[in-house]
Amino acid sequence: MDQRVNDVLERMRQTAAQAAQAMGKAANAASKKTNELVSSTKVNLQIFELKNDIEALYKEVGRSVYMAHTGEAVDPQEIDGKIAQIDEKVARLSCLQEELERQRPGKRCPACGKACQPEDAFCRFCGQRL
Image (cartoon, rainbow, N blue to C red; front, side, top):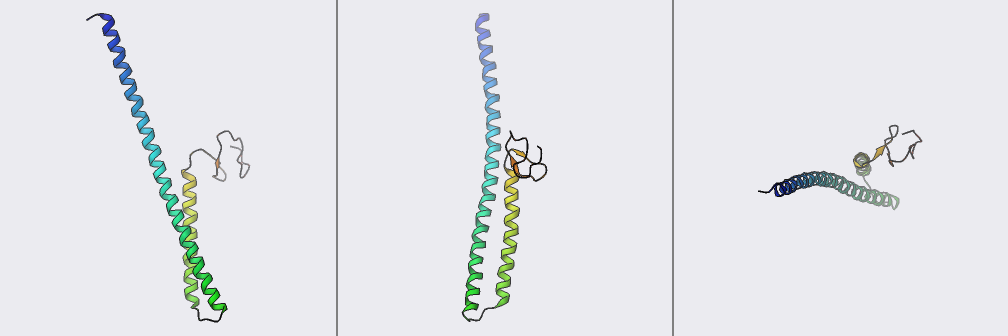
C-alpha cells in the first residue's frame, strides 16, 4: 500500500482511539454526576418527609392544647410523647440538612463549613479568610 494511505489510516486509528478515550472520560464524569444527583435527591426526599411529619405532629399537639383549653380531657403523656417525636425529627432534619450542605460542590469555609463561591477571598457568613 502507498505510504500516504498508511499514514492516513494511522491518523484515523489514533483519532478514533482519542475519541474513544474522551468518550470514556465523559461517561465516567456523567456517571459520577448522576450518582451525586441521586444521593442529593434521596436526602432531599428524606428532608421533605421529615418536614411533613413534623407539621403533622405540630397539628396534633395544637389540637390537644386546644382541647385542653376547651375543658376536654387530654392525656399529658400523649402530648409529651408527640413533643419528643418532634424533637427527634428536628434533630434528624438538622443532620440531613448538614449532609446535604456537605454534598454541594464548591469551596468551603474552614471555620464555619459553609459553602462559598470560588472567587471569594473571605467567608460570606463568618468573615474567615479563605
